[in-house]
Length: 219
Image (cartoon, rainbow, N blue to C red; front, side, top):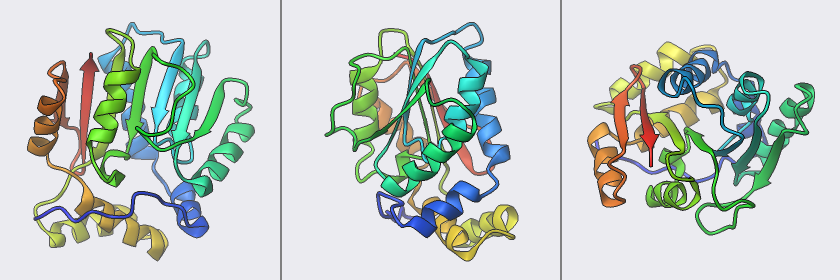
């Protein structure tokens, strides 16, 4: 099906609450596992997390890499409120810095990061170039990169099936947003073309679940 863009920010408080309280155990655990599998010997000192949302993945990685500092970026004030609570509850306030910013326009506090991660941001952006441009500008040479996002289904009917399979018990607002996000996501071919336009041949794209793709590698 043709891609249908959705709003760039999840800035409504109830919308952010539904996302923060949803069960993303499977997909967030998958993200962390992929990072460890693709970069088993890596011990980054400074992570950049783009589109951190409620910071669940940031918190998980901070526990795995106890010597690392994380700059967690999101453009939604509502989402950052839930991220702040999660970080305080996890007693990780000294190692995770929350930053409200829009990429690539807003400046980030560090020029080059040791690792860059992003989950479920790509399909929200008005232009995918915002993500790839930020990656090229803010990664040190050979820095590990992992981007995971939804994979657009073949049809709206397939998208509905996925929503019903994984979010049947979730609030209607989350089910609506999940469906819209599936429709707004990209195919593997489309992402490969985006990488080619930015000269990011060092990054690979692969389907990693029935509803996710992942991009990983080093610049």
